Image (cartoon, rainbow, N blue to C red; front, side):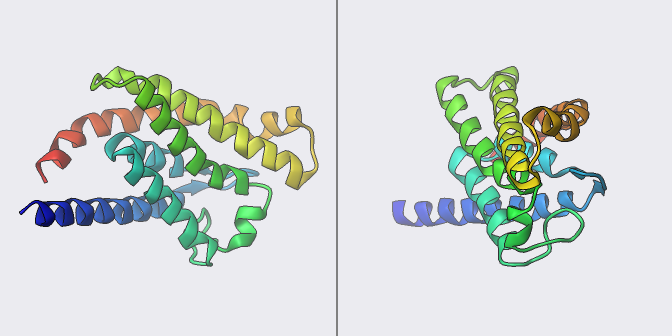
Length: 181
């Protein structure tokens, strides 16, 4: 009986990882073009972090990156391929996996079911995402850190905070439903 339960849990985790990789892919297409496109990817990554256990959220983001890396057009603007990940904005994409891992680590240090306990972990993961993306942008675009921050981070802070808030509210409502499944 225990083995059957473990298989069921593993299948559920795999299904959730695949589902959230698909959700991130769809949200990447909700975009406003720019130097760094404004997308809903960040919202979907936040939702994965909030709704899934640590390992499953990291796997869902890694799966999204792997699918895109092999050329499936899941990145913003229906782009795919390793070239996107190595391009100037690639650091913001692969930074999602670092953000998810850091979120999991911070949540382990702040274990609480309280809705508001996720906020510091989300903010730290967003800062890590910005750092990864900005450092890579500096390298790939051969620009200064200050210029990269001005172009690629500062304009996005209010929108990313809104996406974070939206993910928090939705996850607060959806999480109890997922536990019933």
